[in-house]
Structure formats: C-alpha cells, structure tokens
Length: 100
Image (cartoon, rainbow, N blue to C red; front, side, top):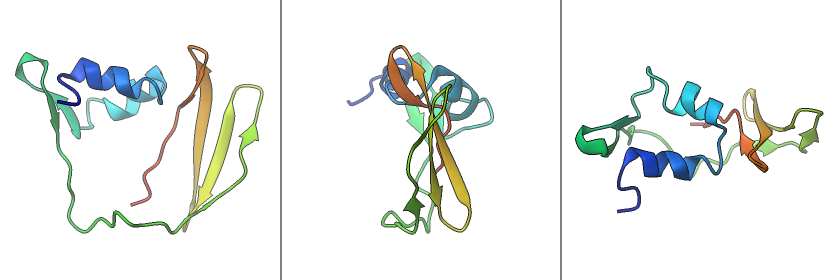
C-alpha cells in the first residue's frame, strides 16, 4: 500500500502543496475526488472517460519571483498561473491547475 490512510496521503502531498491549498482545494468539502472511509482508509474517485493522459498542448513561461513567492504561467487556450510560496523552508504550490 502506497498510502495506508488519509493522513499518510496528506503528509505526502504536504511536501508539494501548502496547507492552505490542501484545505481549500484538494480536501475541500465540495471536492469528492479524495475521501476518507471507515477506519481512515483513502478512497479515490477518478478515471474520467475521455481524458488524454498524453496531453501536452501548453507552453510554460519563465518563473517570476516576487516578494511573497514565485509564479510560473502556462499558456494553453488560456493562461494558468501556478503560485509557489515558502512554507516550512520549502517551495510549495499554493495554486495548481490540471489542463485536461
């Protein structure tokens, strides 16, 4: 088992995403993609039909460092900005978008 329970999964994601982003997006009450089952088990609702796992139709811009963090923009048909901030001495995503 890669993630025996929700806490192990959350700890893993905490290496890459801020606590705020996890609470308000990944594990938000209205996001049922990941849910905790009986006994703390991790359940995943995924596998939408028609998604293209080979999708690569975007262009990444140069990273921009600000006083509060760093951002990079990916352009597809619209712009998607990924913000990173320092948390616990590490750069972590505070916004993250999936293109498909």
